[in-house]
Length: 182
Image 1 (cartoon, rainbow, N blue to C red):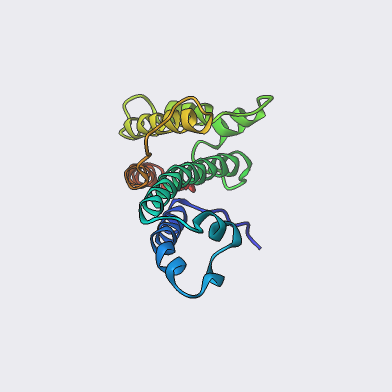
Image 2: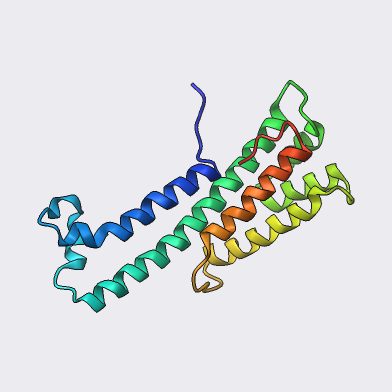
């Protein structure tokens, strides 16, 4: 059986389903069936005024936007890393396999930046995909700052990040037919 990992489309689906849950939490909590929510959530909501509820729901939506954006970028990075491993290990000689094999033979952890560097040097400086890989680097710079507590983003915009990553993925597939990433 083949291992399954979430891709960016599955991250987007999860984002929507979980956001629906946050939006509909009030209806469920005001219903006579508190069994549909966890005890932890029921304890948090017990006795809230309407204003407190709105503030709570807004905080949860902000948290969700942050966590979903991090999950989206993790799904993207995982796909890029799995593609790199496939290129390095594949006997079918995918495009640029020798470069990725050499990259993975280096001792220690291979950073995402090194993988993107390998792509850029494989494609050449004038290739149209380079601009998109630079955009991806920028997204990861923002993601790393957020994930490692170096910045407070007021609220990452999941839909904007997804749109950019979706475009980058499509351009990558146009440029490299055998790309297996995110």
